[in-house]
Length: 442
Image (cartoon, rainbow, N blue to C red; front, side, top):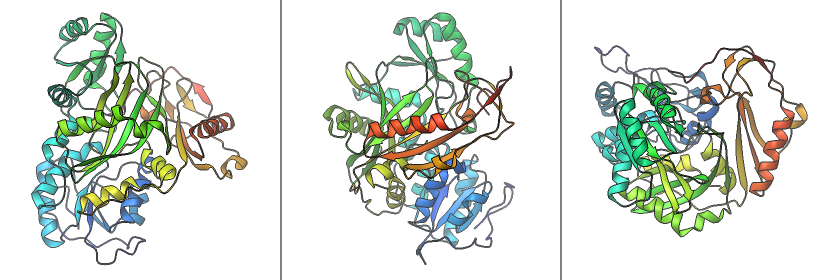
C-alpha cells in the first residue's frame, strides 16, 4: 500500500514489492514506522522481516531495505494526524498484524496508531513520557526512583540559577534528543551559558522535527554507565542483557563503544533489577522492548534515561551474538500479541567500537587488511564515511562524524576488548586537517 506525500490526497493501493525471503506466506503484515540508516538498521529490519511480512511506512523506500519489505506506505511520518488517517484507511484494505518501530522519532506515534486500530501495544502516554526527558524525571521523582535531580529552564539566567542550586558539576541537555546531541557537562557559569545555547539548537538524525523543545539542567551522576536491554510483557520486567558503555572524554558524553557479556554479574544484581523495574512502573510502560540507561553511582544505580524502543548502535546485534536472544524478534512478537522467547541459547560476548576522527578535516583513503576481514571473530567492519568527506573531531563531533565501526565476538568481555583494539591498530583512516567543522546535523 502507498500514500501520496500530498496531504490533500488519500493513500492509494500500490504494487507490492518482491516477496521477502521468509516463509511468512499469507501472514498479515507488520507495519514498521521508519527504515533508518542501513549501517545501523539493516539487522533490525532483517530480523523483523524474518518474523512477519513487513509493510514499511516511510517517505521513501531505501534501496537496501527492498529485500526485507513486502509493501511500502509512502508517507511523511512527521505529520502524525495525516499518518493516522492514512494508516486507518490502509488497515481497512489490508488488516495489520501489528505496528512497531525501532526509531526514536516514532515511538509515540506507533503507540497511538496501535491503540487506534486495537492492536497490541503500550499506552501513548507512556511513550510520550519516554520521549520527554522532563516528564521522565518528574515521574521518576514522584515514584521515588533514583535518578538525577532536574529542572527545565527557559533561558541562560535560569540555567545558571538552577546550576548553582544543584551545585557543580551539572549536565545541560535538550529535553528530547538522542545520541547525546547537545548534552554537556558544565563546571562553571560560563560553561552553563554556552551549553544552554548548544542544547537549544543541536539535533541529530532530524529529531528536532519530532521533539518537544526545551532545555534541562540536571545533577551530574558520577560512575560507570550501563544500559539494561529490557522486555516488558504480561506484567513482567525482564532484563535480557546488560550493556557496558565506553564513553568519550567529557564534557561530551559520546558513546564510542558497547559490550555485552552473557555472564555479566549485573544481570543478577538486585539493585539494578529493582531500579529498572521501578522506572518501568513509574512511566507505566506495559509492553515493549526498552533501552534503560543507568549510572552506577556510589549511592546505587540511578536512571539516566528510559527509551521506549530497542537500543541503537547495534546493541541488539550484540545481544543476539552474545546470548542468542533476538530482541527484534521480541519486538515483532509483542507488536502482534505473541509471547517472545527470551531464553538464552549462547554464553558468549560481543562488542562494538565506533571510530571518530582524531582531528577535524577531510577523510583520506580508507583501508582494511584482507587478513583482518577474514578473522572469524570479526562480525562486521563498516565504513560510514567516504574519502573526501568533511568530518569533525571530538569534542565537537556528533554521531554523524563517525568514520566507521566494527563488531567482534569472543568467549569473554576481555577477549572482545582485545579484539576491538586489534582492529583499531590495523585499520587505516587518515584525516587531512581542516579548520572546518560539521557540528550536529539538522
